[in-house]
Image: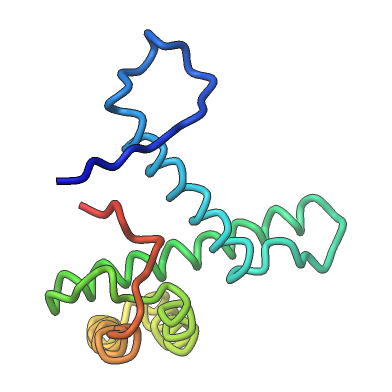
Length: 144
């Protein structure tokens, strides 16, 4: 069998991390980079309409919170319907969550029993429309 070699350049001291652990460490670091890229592009983190720090902080928190809610909703849909995580699209999840956000948020704020039904409907839609069988989601290598 052929052997594959990977070269890594790092500032870590040789005794700080075992050489065999550099590959998984770099892969995890790359996942973090992809998540930040995802947040910047999909949540419009670089397009802030104000220069006031309080407004920018509020919009930043709302955008990141929304992105995290979309990921959580994907996880719930994955577990409920036994979906292949690598085939789910965070981009589609954000779009689907936007479509459900006001109805679900309003029901939760009112303490309505309908909130559970709306959440189930959101998960159903994620299972139907965020599952993209012809695409691999590079952001989702490390999940469980």
